Structures are given as C-alpha cells and as structure tokens.
Length: 223
Length: 108
Image (cartoon, rainbow over all chains, first blue to last red; front, side, top):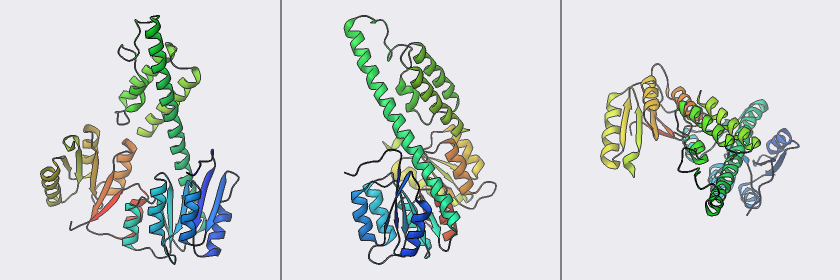
C-alpha cells in the first residue's frame, strides 16, 4: 500500500514527448512538490502502484496505453487523485469520456505554460482543501469517540448522571457537522451549539476555534 | 430507497421535461421537479432537498454552466448532468471545468 507523504504534493507527469514532459517537470518542481515523470503508460502504471500521487498530468495519445485508460486506472487506485488531461487531439468523444471518468481538467495543446500553471495551482488548492477536510473530519471523529468514552465513564461513576450530552438539550458534535445540506440559518444554530459545548468544557479552546473556523468557512462558501 | 430521491430537470423545451418526468417517475419512482429556466431551478433547489439535477446547456437568462456554478455555490454535493442538442468539444471542456459530472446528447 503506498504511503501518503505529509503536506507534500506528489505529482506524476505522463507524456511520450520527452521534451514536453521534462519542461512540465521543471515548471512544476518546487520544494513542497515531488514530481515524477514517465514517458509511457506502462511505466506510469508501475509508478502509480508504488507511489500515492495527488496530481497526475496525462497526455491523451501515447503508444501502448492511452491517457483515458491511465485515467481509469489512476482513479481506481486512488479515487481522490486529481487528473488533468493534456492533449493535442481533443475530440468530443474523448472529452465526454474524460468527464465520465472524473478528469479534473482538459488542456488542449498548443497551450501556454502559464495556462498549465494556473490549472495546476487550482488543482493543488483543491488537493489541500480536500486534505484539510479529511483531517478535520478525523479530528471530529476522534473528539466524538472521546466524548462517548467520557460519557460512559461518567455515567458508570455516577458523578454526573444528570448530564447526558446526547439526550439532553446539549447538542452533539454529530449534529454540528453532519448536515452539509443545511440552509444557511442552521449555521447560526450550529455556532450557538458549538459555544454551548465549549462553555460546558466539552471542547478545548483550540478545538473550539478550529470548528468555528470550519463552520464560518462553510457559511462563506454558501454565500 | 428511491422514494426519497428528488430529481430536478431544467429545460426550456416542454417535451424534454415531460419525457424526463414521465420516464424517471415510472421507472424508478423518483420525485421529479421541472423548471423552464435557471431562476425557477434555483428557487426549487432552495426549497427542496434535490439529489441530482439534469440541465439543458443553452437557456435564456441563465445557461446550464452558470446555473451549475450557482447550484454548487449553494450545495456542491448536488451532481449536475448536462443535456444538450448542440454538443461541441468546447462545450464539453467548459462543463468539465465547472464540475459537471456527465453530458447527455439530445435526442436522448
């Protein structure tokens, strides 16, 4: 099983045109980015099996295995991977197939390096956001699990039997973050619920600030 | 399970709306809402918990891509499928860049 590397963005460039592939590598290489290059589909498959990539730039037409087959394979190995197709042979059929297979973007050659940079930067922003969301959800799950353990211990000890965070008026963290489709008004309730959890010592100052920031971002995203 | 699924179909062609509604309601027992333009669609999106949206691309007032952007600004978990009678590579790429999940070509 490939390992995920911290906050580094792992990128794979697949193009049978070595000059283009090397130019893209130079363009995308950065201290926070590890960039691998493959010049054919089969070595790309091998590389995808060894490493977990966040971003893949694929040439559409290559001898042996084409970009669309590689797109399917990449998504099968890692459904979260962002794949950008770069092609000089764009057709209606390949573009529709790329959508169906979950391509993030489709760049037609000839294109300016600046255009590729913008698309890649947008893709990296998306990767960071997805990663942040996953981490936040994990923290939330951990906090929820801790709360459940805390609740069980307290009920068993009989010290605070009168307080039940999940059946009294105390809002649960599950309620706070589980309903992504809430109309904007519900966020006010959620913020109030969050304050109540903090007042009752269920959240640390850091956790409170982090959850509040997440909620505010959700509200802004809805606006 | 399909009883709770609400689908929104947006098209300025009445026939398309009727065909989609009749087909989806009869085959899968989905609840189908129809809108003749983007603004009507947004009103329904705000009112109902829509699971999936099919939209025409070329429509007056708000086209399919602009409508998708507004839908996703409200709720980015709603998948949007484009239906169009005038497919072009440019249109497909434009929809791809805006998070549309599939592309159907009329006549369907």
